[in-house]
Image (cartoon, rainbow, N blue to C red; front, side):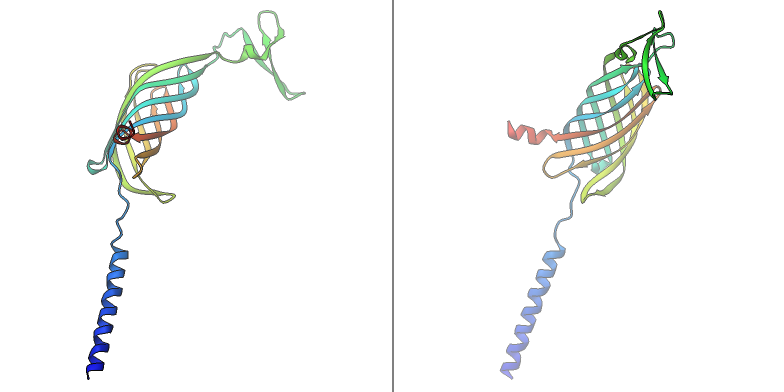
Length: 207
């Protein structure tokens, strides 16, 4: 009888230990979105009435998943644009079907000239923008990384001055780093690009 009782106690202890181990595995914390204020840097392509090219927005993003909101302020939106050709341009591109190449012709004298003259000039475009977004999805997983989908409205200060709609994704992390992608479309304005962010609180700890 004592032997059976001891065996029963051992079995109960073993079961309790196994249950405790199982509970520990189940109780592992799930990944959560890291809210915070991020300093952001972006690179993308932009198309406006003045031309198209590379756009580099610099600013801040306030990410608040608890209230399903995200605010982005681009204090400096720097674009390097290739100016669109005008209809009365002096230099014209001509395509030769025989050689399947194109060349540049000076319309004032009909002579072939340097191809660089047919390339549009590069303009530097400076602007500012603000957009406010709603987070309809806060459990988006891409490559085991938790993020959120955002949609919203924004306003661009100038060149062009316009309202625009936004659609994108934002992925903050426990390390304080973030990555995102965004499409913005408005009157005479289209932007698509990536942006990277760093939590301001992490920057202050490093300084």
